[in-house]
Length: 272
Image (cartoon, rainbow, N blue to C red; front, top):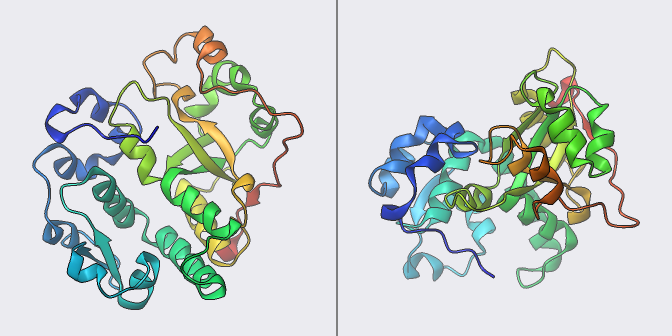
């Protein structure tokens, strides 16, 4: 069933006090007050090669694919008074390099197959754009729990890892942020894990992900990404202080027979 975001005037203010939306407080005024217009979004844009434009029938009449329009003209078509597109704009404001990497790869795929067909790589790129999470992993031992879908181990027995820096999740997908507007939603992201040295920061993980995507080292197939039930991260859901939550909630699915994940990405100075 297609998710429909709540109307702006009925969004529970509590959702902005809990991750992931609480982690976007630098744009709290855009999220909590009246709908911002296109000019307000462009006033905050750090990417000089791209800007937001209202998605109108006249704009769409140019016949360009959404991704081609960004690549060729720097125009990010944006529906006004729309949660999905507002949150997409906020992701562009915070992670322009990662957005640009996805756009470049999408345009390459369109050039290969045309705008009417979708390759496995395009599906992977789109899934990450909508539901992506970059996970900075400073303790590779946690990967065995994650790959085995040992959610009790990853989120309960090792819950301290989520606050002491051994593992950190950064929500990138704007559809995930949109789902977070409804507190009852169980959030599961499609993650790219980056193994970092202990002295590296999360920005290094973001840049490594952008580098890998841009250069075709990642996201050739949706199956590359690891599911990560974000609702399990301590502090991210109302029931995450209850061990039974990790055994019973529908988002904590067991590993499917035969399912295995590719090697994780690793940070290198060339991607800094």
